[in-house]
Length: 231
Figure 1 (spheres, one colour):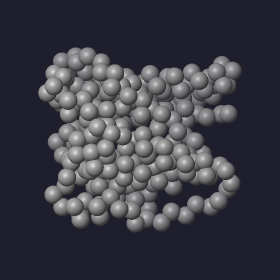
Figure 2 (tube, rainbow, N blue to C red):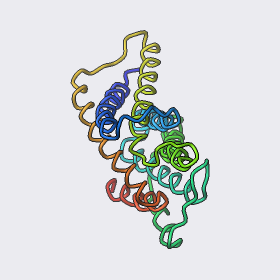
Figure 3 (cartoon, rainbow, N blue to C red):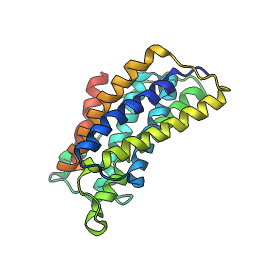
């Protein structure tokens, strides 16, 4: 089982944590929040599963599918107040629903159980990514009662640290399965770290956008973008 993607995602989470350390310093060294670490665990598990999805149905189709599910789930949990998320009602219900509705046709050539498993994994990844902010939303919603910070910046390092711990555990399990001979391409190390830092910046901006804009609007607005990029 030669899966260089697992090494890539591990290094990527390390790069993400490096940027998160800068955020930690700039926000006054807030404590580690275990519930916010769960958000990072959702991200890391989803990130690891995408490796198998891309091997099964390719990057283009896989990315379009899991991002579509992500946007639908992320929109639904806040639109209807599911899983402890504060309910958010858009100003225009019709336009909001149009934004999240899918109008793309995806053609997948059948290849037995491999493709079926990959498609099933896209649903799992979409659910994990779509709920990536759910634990943090719960912390922010209860901030007045608990005294926890009301800004998402204070939880970002906990998110990245949770992702790092989870991805490390995943790589350890992979190493055990490989009998301590994991497939590691040293040439991927620096690009993986850099991509992790870049992705961390984008994720942090996404966190801030969800704080200042309604999440129900953010997810309905971002879904069509993936279709345009993939096409």
